[in-house]
Structure formats: C-alpha cells, structure tokens
Amino acid sequence: MSDSKSKIEEIIDTTQNSDDQYESDDNKDAEEHDDAQGHQEPSSSTAPSSSSKKKKKKKSKAAKALNALTGKSIPDALVEKVLETVQAQGGEASEQANAENVRQALEHLKIMDVVKGKAGPGGINKKDMGEHKFWSTQPVPQMGEGPPEVDGYIEPSKPLEEVRQEPYPLPKDFEWTVIDVNDSGQLAEVYELLSLNYVEDDDATFRFKYSAEFLRWALQVPGYHKEWHIGVRVKSNKKLVGFISGVPMLLRVRKHTFMAAEVNYLCVHKKLRSKRLAPVLIKEVTRQVHLKGIFQAIYTGGVVIPTPVATTHYQHRNLNVTKLVDIQFSFVPRNMTLARMIRLNQLPNKFQLPGMREMTEQDVPQVTELYLKYMQRYGMIPIMDAQEIKHQFLSGGGKADTGNKWRREGQVVWAYVVENKDTHKITDYVSFYSLPSTVINNPKHGVLEAAYLHYYASDTAFIENADGNGTLKERLQGLIGDALIAANNAKFDVFNAVTMMDNDLFLKELRFATGNGFLNFYLYNWRTAPLAGMKEENGVPIGRGIGVVMV
Image (cartoon, rainbow, N blue to C red):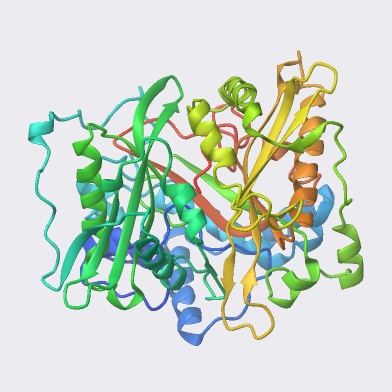
C-alpha cells in the first residue's frame, strides 16, 4: 500500500519544474498549484524536445511508477490505431501527429485515470492516493469520491464573526502586503515577479510575460476588492516574493448561481519555494474572500490536484510559421516543407464576414443581451452585466490614436462585432486577448506574441436546428476565421484556444493543432458532476460544460 502511494506521488510530482523543492507534504501539495492558476504553462505544438538528464530521469521514474500501477505501458498497437484514426481525419493535427506525441497524449490520459481512481489494480481509493495533506483540509471534492448525487456546497457559509479576523502567520523573515494596482510602482513589482518566476513550459523554453496593462485589465474588474490582491515581502528589504489574487464573479454552475472568487496568479519566487509560502497564500486569500461573505471559488491549473471538474486541451493556430519553427514552438511535420506549411497557414488580409468591425461602447447593450442568451448553452459561466461586458471587451483596448488599425499602444484585448447593415442589429461578436511569453535563451527571438480566444457568440445558434444542420458550425468558422485575420494583422505569432464552449465546431477546420498542454478547472467548496471539456460528459458535447475564460 505505501509503495503504491509513493509511486503515485512521484507521478504527480512530474508536473513540477525540476528545481522545485518542498519542505513537507503539506507544502508540496499546495505548491503543485503554485505557478499554475489561470493558465497552463505556455503549451506548444512541437514534438517532445530533449531535456536535461535530470528531467529525463524524473520522467523515467514516473513512467516506471505508472507502469507498475497500470500493469503495462501503452501498447504499440494502440498507439498505431490512434495514429491511424488521427491521420484519417486529415487537417494539420493529422500532419503533425506521430507515434511519439500520440503515446504522450495517451500516457497523460492514463495518468488522469490513475489520479481519479479509474485505473490501477482494483482501482485507487483515497488512502492509496495519499492524503494530499493540504487539499484534504480544504472543502474540495477529494480524489475517488465519484460524482455527487446533487450539486451544492461542501461546507456551509459562516457568519462574519466566525471568520478568522487575523492574517495567517508567515515565516519570520516575511510580511504581508496589499498590492495597490493603481500604483505603477507596485504593479511593476508584480509584473517583475510574474515575468521572472511564473509559469514555464516543461523544457523551460517559454514563460508568460504579463504586462502592466494586462494586470490592470485582469485585476480591476467591476466590484473588485483591493484586499484580494495579496503579496508577501521580505521584511529586511521589502522585496515582493509572493503574490496571489482574487476577483469577484457571479458564477452559474448548471442550475445554481452564486458569488465566487476567481483566484489567479499564485506565484512564489523560485528561490523561496521551500519556505511554505504557497499554502499560506492560498489560505490568506481564502480568508479575505470569506470576509466579504463569499465562500466559493473557481481556479484553473495545468497540474492535477483534488479534483478537476473538467479538463480542457490547448489548441494552437500557427500565424507566423517561420518564427514558431525557429523558436521550436512548432515543427515541420514529415512529408511537409516549411514553404508549404507557410502557404497552408496563410490568411486573407481583410475580413470575410459582411458587417465585421471593431466593437464600440455603443454596442455594449446589444452585446450584453447576446452574451447572456448565447451563454445559456454552457454548463458553467460567469454572468456579466453591461458594466462587466464593457470592462471585459473594451477597457483593455489601448491608447486611442496610437499604433495602427489593428493594434494600439498598450492594447491587451481585441473585440469585434458583426452588424447587420440594414437593421443595425449586432448578430455576432468575438474577442481575444494578448498574453505574450518570454522566449528563454533564444538569440534571435525574445518574445512569443500569443493571442488567446476570449468570448464569442452568434445569433445563428437560435435558428431552429442550427446545431444539427451545420449552420452554426459554418457561421462560427467564419467568425473565428475573421478573428484569426485580425490577430494576424496585429502581428501575433500564434492564436491559442482550449477545448471549451463551441470551439470543437471550428478548431479542426481552421487548422488549429493540438498542443501538449492541459488546463484543469476547479471549484472550491462546491460539488457538481464532471463538466464537458476535452471530452463529452453525460451526453453534453465536447467543450459545452465550460463557458468561463480564465485570463
């Protein structure tokens, strides 16, 4: 029993950077979530690249442990069968598929089954899994529990007087600070901490590069609480070495609607990841959220902890093919030349949908109405009013009268609408945001310019049988196709999405390739059955369980 437990912990530990060290199981469990909220590490569509000997050894240990648990490795025949199926479907994903990345995907799915208790000799129960010491103390669904009979909270809300009033204690060399995002100096400190210490890919090639404008847009949503932007400083020199944030969100999960905190940007300085700062940051932001009378939260991560409500898979659409190949984000598939790859990914210079234009403030009422109606299609969504729609789609629009038609100075979000020229009705909208990554140790390219699909909608969905007869599919391909044109004209290198919302209707057709990153969605103090992400759940199609875009 104990041997099985240690082997699973080894598997889970492979999701960490090789330089992470932990002092205790409690800290380790929380640190698995460090650097992983809001986004998976910058995923790529490359074949697995070489790593350090240390990392190879670590992955080898994990593979052996996994094989010991499941009885055998992925059979070659299964890999070949899956590869044949993918290639038969055509498209760029089939061109980039090979035995190695198919095997990698299957191994990931097998690990997911193991940690969820669906694989292994006789199944894996809670005791076999290890106690997940930090998360076992939190009101979250535990591994192996199975879907609940009814949705609802895990722990009841507390009266304000029963909520802890004092901050949690920190190690003696550190102190708490509240970050004022209106203070450019403090915002620069957060930017520096995240830029140098936040999420990296497994091979330490890419690291997210959050701009000050992006952080203002993400952290200053309508109704935000400054007390939820929490930092840790070194007492002696006041250096910011830890950060976590929360913003309020009215969240609907299936038939239940409640206020929740969207928790994000948990980051601890690399050199201090043995100081047990991550679990206390999580507990402190939880305390601050409770002080506002809110007892549920939503968060995401690339790692598996107790317990994902859904898992989505990253998808990438190449725009600047030459650069992506240069930095090894993408690769030239077998039976393909770089010139042909560039040609296949070319886009028109102008929008293809009649009436497509940039969104303005005058469009907010119609876009809000369309948003609320369209989002009813999905199992879990943020409910936003006009003020929130204005913030999400327009407040990060950059400085007026700067840049060019496609990109303004300081712009972090792009939003477009389709207007019927006769009725002036807004029939569609689409948005995307900018989140660049630093390209680490590349002499030619310093930054990967990445656009991420945000929210979209089309009133075509309300036409009878629009799903069944392909009408909505065709319309969304045109709408997102125009978003790709806008992103390409704005000089982005790649356009990213995950398998959520209605994305499955256009990813293949618009030449998105499956990446190697996964994004897990989590709910704090709320139980619900699994939601459809990268696979369908209980008859709900792929993606339609998730309508929350975590920036």
